[in-house]
Image 1 (cartoon, rainbow, N blue to C red):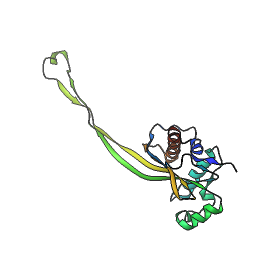
Image 2 (cartoon, helix red, strand yellow):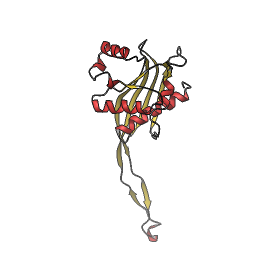
Image 3 (cartoon, one colour):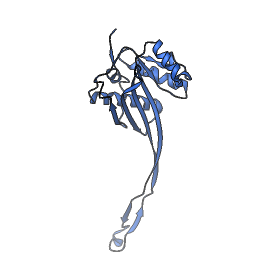
Image 4 (cartoon, rainbow, N blue to C red):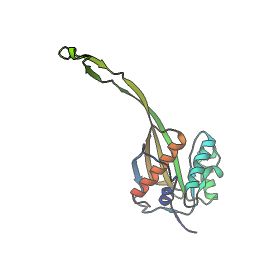
Length: 195
């Protein structure tokens, strides 16, 4: 059977989505594994909403250029958190690599911008006198920062071979956010010459 390179698979995930507000902020790669290759990859997105888990895992698998399998097709939501059951299900399905996308945190940061003050001279006759000072209104808005981890695990060793921490600022909606997170990860893998 042909071996699959995980970084190559991730490069092809979710092509076609812009990600201007999503950045990979840190990465780590196991220096003892120059180029991880696996025969069968499973995609996992643990989430309390089973339909969202299914949608994300299926979406990633659908966009991969090589074969992959969504864990929801052979691991239930409750079994995903059970170590022994998960281990047995991965082994019985011939999975030797696992890509795990996990949302970690959503922070909100309120940003307040004070208005500008400008000097205005209402007429020519007031130009030599003190100006009228007008201050524009101040405004505030909330910036949302979402943090996620994308990790590639070797099922045989249960150890990570690559980890990326990703931050996205002000995502428009969850679907777009997830697309952006995975695309940013794939781009970083290419930049780090893992593919």
